[in-house]
Structure formats: structure tokens, C-alpha cells
Amino acid sequence: MADVFYIGMDLCSDFTQLSFYNDIKREPESVSQLNNKDTYLMPNILFYSTDTEHWYVGGEASEARFNENGTVVDGIFENIRNDGKLEIAGREYSYQELFMMMVKLHIDSFLYRYEAAEIKKLVISVETYDPEIFNLLSGLYQEMGIDRECIEITSHLDSGLYYIFNQPTELWNNSVALYDYSADGLNYYRIDIGRNKEPKVINVIHEDYTQQMSLSKFGNDTYQMDMDFAKIAEYEGKKAYISAVFLTGVGFSNKWMKKSTNVLCQGRRVFVGQNIYTKGACYRAVGGEYRGFYDEFFVETKENVLSDIGISLGDEADTFVPIITGGKQWYNTHGKINVILDDTDVIAIVYKDHRTGEEKRETVRIHGLPKRPNKTTKVSLEVEFDSPSEGAVIVRDLGFGKLYPTTNKIYRKEFTI
View 1 (cartoon, rainbow, N blue to C red):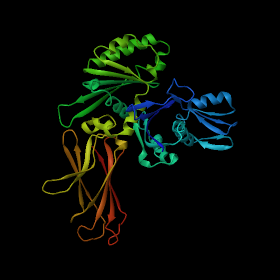
View 2 (cartoon, one colour):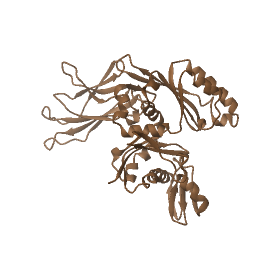
View 3 (cartoon, rainbow, N blue to C red):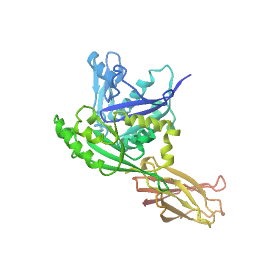
View 4 (cartoon, helix red, strand yellow):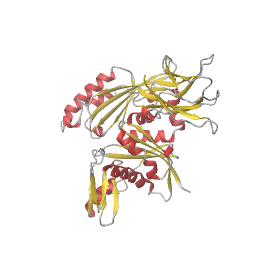
């Protein structure tokens, strides 16, 4: 019988991390390198060995490059938009092909540790939405030979929320702070939990400190870095009552915090970990009870849709039928319904603010359809987004069975909410 895994993957520019759900411990467990059990950071490099005619990835690639003849490929993320080709062992590879090979090999390097292993769900967490990376990863299910529904792509922020809200409740009785100190600099997120109103809301406030705090700015001057971070922590700590602080990113990997530790620990618990996003992605992969906070709260972030979009049936009760419900990242928000028109060629589109209930309405008139008897015209209505506040409602004529075939007409109503 095959081992079935829920996997979380944190895919960054320099390193990748993996975690899997441990059924016995009932929590995600980080995957270490095969050749180094002390680290979970797998470098994003490939190595092709001409000795064995074999591709290596991560820590195995780092080791093989010194023991075998072959070709090292790095800078894969930086060249994701590069249209050039690399010739390796007599074959040309695009950077996009190498990127997909790297991702697949990272996953396979874990699955190969078991005689029979299957992916139940894989959630890949990337720093922010990038259309090039998303488009490539959307085809990963084909490379892995699994169903499309088995793979989801999300962001660091969403993964961080999944991690935080699957910690003990006392850690998020009040606001929670998340500091992400990556190679690009420091970003701060304050997660405020509102329980006294309906709907209950989780609001995420983001502050960009990359200009004030970056590894390149301080170099080896860890004293000044500690002083500057302490000022930021003290300033942000005065804005809200914070129950817990989570620190992640390569910037926090060395022991330079002294004064800032004292500031952070005043009346709150502090956690440092490089595996927050991979474990959060793993919680999302499992779903069920682990997505309970998304069922209880409406989540407001810089990347989430804040409105529900649907149609009014035009009856006495003015019934609202949702096509999509807000509270999720715009690039993961999709919805579709089918409607049979009842003596009308007009559809009322309703944009409803999920928090306030305020509505905006627009009508779509469907021109050019052939004359059909009443209730024999079926259309689909689909919503897609280009940003958290912009997108389109797409109406397609579906006809009505063999009697009234579709005209294949498509109508597009763009919106800003």
C-alpha cells in the first residue's frame, strides 16, 4: 500500500523547503536534506553528471559537483524570463524547462525515500504573485502525473496565516506580529483579530521596511542592525497589543539580536523559524480542521478579494446568488454558475462588500442571441480577477441541449470594485 502525503513547499529564489503532514504527531514535519540531516534549506541548483548521466538537485547537487564531472546550473529564478538556451550534454534547455525540472526533482527527492509514495495534495508557497512562475507551476500536475486539483499555489502571507492560526489559541488572543527578513529586506505584518462584529474579520496590515532594514545595507555591522530593528519593533509594538511575534527569513538566521530581543519579549512570546511558510502550506494542503479560521473569519489582506460577486434573481426577495465569495487571494478566486434566462436578456450583476453589505449593481444585456422559447436559453457566468479589485464577468451562451445549440457567443463585462 502506498504512502499518501500532504506536502507543503516553500519555493524561494535561493532555497526550497519541504514539509509533510505527520499523521502520528498531527502536525507538519520539515524534510531535511538527504546528505545533511541538520538543514532543511535545499539550494536551488541543478547538476548534470556526465559520469552517471544523472541530474541532481539541492544538497545532492552541491555535493556531486565536487565529486563528479558535469555541469552546474544555478541562477534559475533570476533567469526565469530569459529566453536563452543552455546546452547541456548535447541538448538545449530553456530556463523555464530547468525551473520545472528543479521543482519536480525537489519533490521527487523526498518521494524517493519511500518504496511507494503518492501526493494527496501539494501546496506551493511563493513570496508573492508572479505570473511567469504561476503559469509554469500551473502545469506541474502534468509533470508529476497527478490530477490538477492535487496542486495549489499560494503566497508566503497566506501560508504564514495558516501557520499562525494553527498554533495554540492563546498565541493569537490578541494581535500577532510577523517579521519577514529576507534577502530583499524586512517586511512587517500585523494580524488583527476582530471577534466582536459579524462577520468576524482578520485584518492584515503590511509595512515595508526594506529601505531601512536590508542585509546589504548593514553588511557585518550587526550592532547597528540590532539597534535599528529594536526601534522598529518598539514603534510597531506600541500600535497594538500583541500576543505573539513570529520571526522568519535568512536575516534572522544569525544570532545578532540583543537589544531587539529585549524589546520583542516584553509581555509577549517570540518564535524564530525558517520553516513557517512550508509548514503553513502543509496545513493548507491538509485542509479540513486546519482551515477552520478561514471558515470562522473573513480575511482581509493586500492580496485578497474583499467583495462577493453574484447575480440578483429579480424575485420579490431580491435573492442574491454568489458566483464568488471574497476573502481569498485574487489569483485563487474563481467561480462559475449556470443560469436559465426567464423571459429576459438582461442579467443583474451584484458586487457586495462582504464587510458592510453595501452593494453596487450593473446590468449585462445579452445581444444577438437567436429567438428561443422562454426558459430555453442557458448561459454560464464566470468571474476572473486581474487584481484584488479588478476583473471581469464572462457570460457564455450554452444553448439548450440539441434543440437549441449554442451560438458560442461570449460577453465580457469588466469591473472595478
